[in-house]
Image 1 (spheres, rainbow, N blue to C red):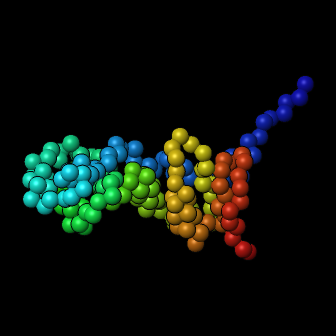
Image 2 (tube, one colour; image 1 turned 180 degrees about the horizontal axis):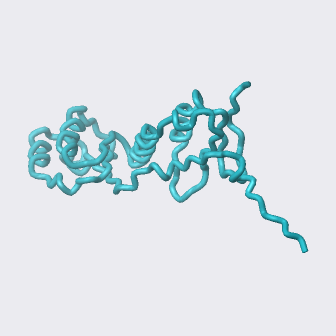
Amino acid sequence: MSTDTIINKVQQSGLITIDLEDYFDSGEKVLFDIKNYLHEGIILKEKDFRAFLKEHNWEQYAGKNVAITCSVDAIIPTWAYMLVTTKLQPYANLIVFGTLKDLHAKIFSQAITKINAADYTQAKVVIKGCGKLEVPVSAYVELTNKLLPVVSSIMYGEPCSTVPVYKQLK
């Protein structure tokens, strides 16, 4: 009988996997669309808008990630977005101008700022490529840029099946 032991070559390789999903804030994402507060769907009336802002229940955004936008073709003055921000800021976790897709990308961007590149000095890093969440390409670019100065190599995918992205010259 053979007593061959199964050897986990991936584990022995010294690869460190970074899964961006581990850093993602999964809090609720909300779209605040100014179109809902336009007069006749096309004009922002300052007096009416300020009255709405004063009476709106802003506490409902507590702990949420909010994208502010106007989804119709209307000219919205910059100060309108700024006013909404002043109301959201005491409650919301994160506020961005743009779509829910923009918000999603910003959440990943903030997550990447929490990664200490020095922890990966001379490491062989695999940036995980598949998961439950859709990770924007911008997050992969940002993380690669952050790690390049310190790592010995960067790969993309899963430790058992990677695509080489970068290898430090010796």
